[in-house]
Amino acid sequence: MSTLSFPRIALALLVLLVLGLGGAFLKLGMNPPLPVQTIVHKELPGTQFAATRDQATPQAGQPLPAMPEPVAAPTLQH
Image (cartoon, rainbow, N blue to C red; front, top):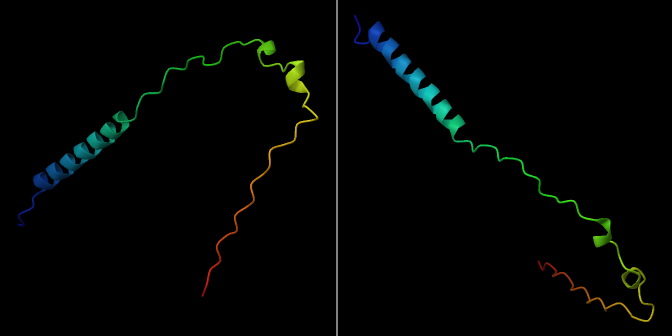
């Protein structure tokens, strides 16, 4: 008869099963709980975002700021 008997094999399988299930439950328990949903946005009046007459029409006499010149990409030398 071999040194590995049925009770030892069954015990080893049972220990592996318990360790596997314990690890799975620990992994499930490590997930953070979902946050409580709270109302973030408040009811704001539309007049707070409405543009005034001075902001709505652009000034015709003001030029746009100058755009900087694009920098040339470095070239690869072989």
